[in-house]
Amino acid sequence: MKATLGKLNYTQHQRGFTIVELLIVIVIIGILAALVIVAYNGITQRAENSKTISAVSAYQKALLQYMTEHGEYPRALSSTSVWANSCLGEGYSGATCWNSPSSYMERTYFNNEVRTYMGKQNPLPLTSTQVISGRNGAAYFYGSGLTVDGVSQPNMLIYVLNSSIGSKCPVGPIIGPDTGYVWPNLKLNPSSGRSEVYTDGIGCFITLPNSI
Image (cartoon, rainbow, N blue to C red; front, side):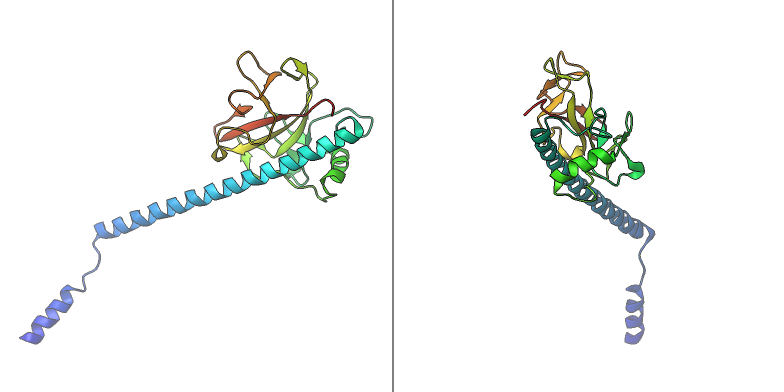
């Protein structure tokens, strides 16, 4: 009799999980996986933002050094060509950057002029590989009609950051729209601390001085 009861007790302890228990375990695993993915994406975005900030700062210093020595910023195609929007860095997909609302190109002459002031790096470092609202990387921008606080200042750098960086641009001096200021008439240090805002990030415009 004791042997029979012992066998019965052993059998009762061998029952499997119920469907409800299995569903609970699956839900818990799903929640943990989602948390891991969110954390990983946040780390990746912060790393890309840091890469962009560092690269843009380096290009800003390089262009200011170029201006100090040459009295102007690098031209697009040759020493006698016009200035034009140019990607900062080499190796962009399709050799284009920004891409919204229009694409800017990698320009060999511009990059070679900058290279000396970037430690002769070859290729020049990309500013970022992340795409934010269709925009990627950073660029030198030339706009003949651009003004800052009512003064003509056609040269600037533009870059984008993922929204995880916050609402303000860390590398400046920043210009952008503000009360009474709309493109292409921009304000130095707009109250928002940024130049543009997108659904997944911010755009930052750095004004470059006409002379040093």
